[in-house]
Length: 212
Image (cartoon, rainbow, N blue to C red):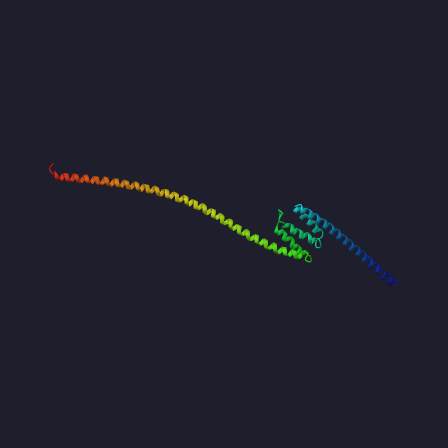
């Protein structure tokens, strides 16, 4: 009798535990369905905001959807949508890096998603684009540095031109003074020649009239 009661007790406990497990599983399933339904509503709101150009609100609604269904569908769709919104040409706050971050999360946390292949393609394409932009920025920085250097050289060239003009003016002034000095020398030579001629005339006169 004791053994039968023990077996009966075990069976009752087993069925009770099984019932609780089924109940909890049902609750979890119901909760998941509710969360998925709410996530779908957030995704629909995001789409409506996006159609009106409300990019920030669309991102916010997609984030809410992803948090509700993190690790399961439609969380992957929410991440994919955010990746797309961040690179929308009309989005004033677009960012390739934020878009790549969303697609990489999708690949990491939803590797079995149907959107994983497209996400991988976007990661590759956007990565190439970021690299090209980085190289372009480097070239623009070099061009800016060269322009600044060119401006500096032009200023120095202008300074040299002004200095050359000053030197030419000084040279012209010196040439004028040299010319005047030459004229004065010519006059002095004429005076000197005149004086020498007079001296010779006086000496010749004295020789002709020694007794006077």
